Structures are given as structure tokens and as C-alpha cells.
Image 1: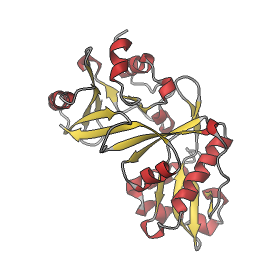
Image 2: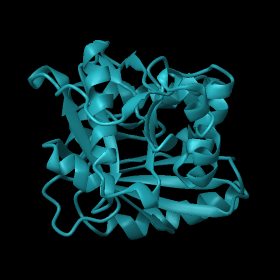
Image 3: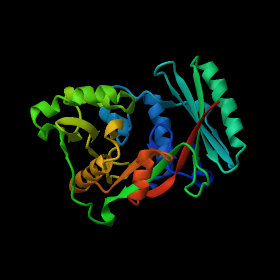
Image 4: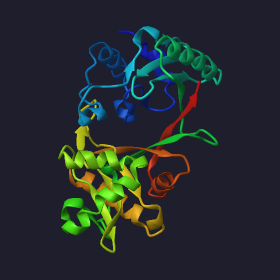
Length: 288
């Protein structure tokens, strides 16, 4: 075993695992970190990797020979060849000086692997004051019944054909939110259902795909979705209608929970906080 859990566990201020992202606190074990090292050798997806559903090959891999594991801090670098390439160093530890050390390592590894981007990912605890970056939020479906969906929301396939045909232009406008990619998956029939909100015969918001998969300890989780509402359609509670419909779908299809990542103080962040989700911490990414 490479990692010492008695060293690593106190450093985990937020439940974030390199290449896997946020995980449920109950599933946070040393085995997850060990598994990322094994996956780096094989190039395969781990059985519970959320990216596995998209197919292809796992792009981001741990640079296992460059991991720094000490009592006071742990640096776990990863490499992605996507685009112009990125090295990320996940910096675990309690003292602020680790960011500068991690940035130095990230820059060194980016040069060694001939990639353009070098970044540091710092997980931070939920008690962090004036947080920046991304908030990790937990929705537990076992705590009570999700309210029945309301508003003009239904699966895309359940809208009339002329309304369904407006999804493509909607997806193009919201491409930066991942909707264009989602649309290609829908066209290939390679994803779960997508929920959409329509106003005056046109789709103006969507969330999906809706899929439930087991996590590392076998608990069913509602997988992350792409989620967007046209700017001109905001302020009508459509985002809340879509989100609540998605949560209802997840609960009714046996999911125990969902983990969400939201930009701090962004619309989705404010929505999730107003819905009573539990904050598990933050990740703050900086350029090295």
C-alpha cells in the first residue's frame, strides 16, 4: 500500500479524490486513492468512475511516480492530454504554504510532459470563510420525500415533436454549459433521459442525463447532470422546477444521494443552498 491513511485522512478537508472528483464522505477511504494509482497503470476506468458512462478512454491519470506523500501534506499530480494538455497538482494539507510548493511541482511537471497548463487544486473545508471556486454539496434522498414536480417540465421525449425540435438550437446557445455535448449523446441514444422546461412551445432549460450508478461502496447515486436555463428565461423559477424534478426522478429511481458541484455564489449555488443541501467543502483551482 502506498498511502498511509493515518497521514492522509487528517489532510482531507473536503472529500475530493484526484481523477474521480467529489465522493460521499462514507465512501472516502484509502482504497479510493490506491485505486487511482492502479488505474494510472492500466489506463482503464474504475468501475465507479462517473466518466465511465461517456465511453472512450480515461483521459486524466495520476502521475504516480511524482506523488509526494508526507505526514504534513500530500501532493497528487495528474496529467490530461486533452486540448493543449494540463497538469494538476491536488494539494492536501492544513498549512497555506503548500499552495506555493504545489505550484512549483505543477510547473515542473508541465514542462517535463510538454503540456501548456499547470494548475493547483486545493480542497478546503466547509468552515472556510470567504470561499472561492467550487462548492461541493450533498443531497440525501433518504432524509425525506422530494416534492412532486411542478411547472412546465417533462422529459424531452414527452414533449410534442415540434417542441423537441427546439432542443438543438437551445443546446447550441448553451454550449458553454455542456448542452451541445449532451445533445450529441442524446442523438446517439447513449445517455439517460433529459428533462426540459418549455415556454411558448420552445425549450428554454434542461437538466440531464438522468442516470443512477453505484458508488465505490455500492450505494446508488444520482450522477451529475448538465443544467442550464436560457438567460432570457431566468427569473421564472424554471431552474428550481428543473432541479426539483431531477431530484424527484433520482429518488423515485432508487438513488440514495447526489453530489453537486456549484460555482460559489453562482445561480446554481444559491439554488442548492436555498434547497437545504449540505456543504461538504470547496475546491479552489489556481494557475501555477
